[in-house]
Length: 496
Image (cartoon, rainbow, N blue to C red; front, side, top):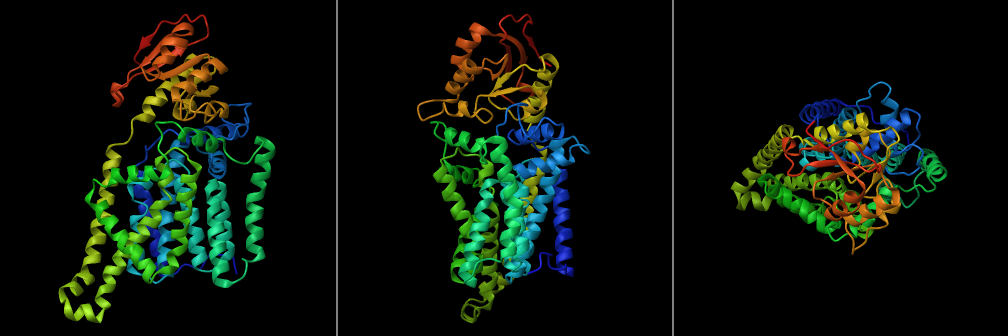
């Protein structure tokens, strides 16, 4: 089988153009979208591009990003465009559009004509998906969906290539080749082609060899850290967290309607649309794996469930449209026949419009965390020695702009800090251990967040030198910077 994609038809060119327009809409709507964790990857990318190595703290070979491919992509473009947060948002926006295009191709391959356009528009505009903008998640999902779309068109080599890139984007991408290979063997009664296996190995093996030599192991330290975070009493594991995440959206009527349609769609898969089973198997195994790992709940962990959820919603619409083809119902319930003709179209327009509106509202409610944390990081960059170690809980945005060695109270950068977390401890206990173990020259804390640390170690060894008020950014607490060098001379100040 040829690795080249199927030549574009008129419909596929139209679908691709539509996907690009959706991407532009998302990019313009959420240009300043930001959350903390992706900035860890941005710092890796910048350090790599500037010659400091594949590291967060120069000289410390710890793999604290879970996305080597996204890191390499950002590092490659960095010399041309150094604004990594906006570059990542742009890549994410177009990845969402391309993911929608791959869903369109899947639907088109499996006899969903009008419904394929609903897939293209509903997936990239779903609020949880757009909320991951700036991270590797949109790119990861585009690669996963591209692998499934290539599998549906029996293009083994392209499916193997995209599966390998998905693995390099996130380790849990390993589920994609496993699921696709299983269903291929089940259907064809033979193994995938040697060329496909060779392509997958040639793309993935170099990274794992490098990671083993450079870091000592190929798995990211964040997996270890978030497993330990999951053991804390304040944490919530994957499946209970799914109920929490769903409750956030259940307040919206359109989401309630999507839930109802997804239940109908699931029944339709079991009844007649079993070709979609590999994607259902993917999210099922994915969910069970994350629950078994016991990691703490983070909203972006649920993003891989969204494309399959949207597929089920669309299949629910397809089932409603299918009612008109039933001779029994057409005779006994003519009104239902009319509904099945126009109802799914009206519902599709309603859902697409509701999600587009939610996207516009998100544009007006962009998080203020970026300017707040950025100002703290830039102050540290301007007022502390280049080699000063800074202890903090959230190391993404502040760490990226501070450009100082960081001691991470959550254990993402120093795995031995994460090892202090267990069912009988808190983040404060980990922070207390970290400041005694590493004795950072500066500490950044939310006011009154860690009272034992503030009243003990901080009161005895540090001086408050800067207060950043949270009120201008909608935060109920201020951020404090402490000088812990032993002989601080700067008096505390407030403001910017």
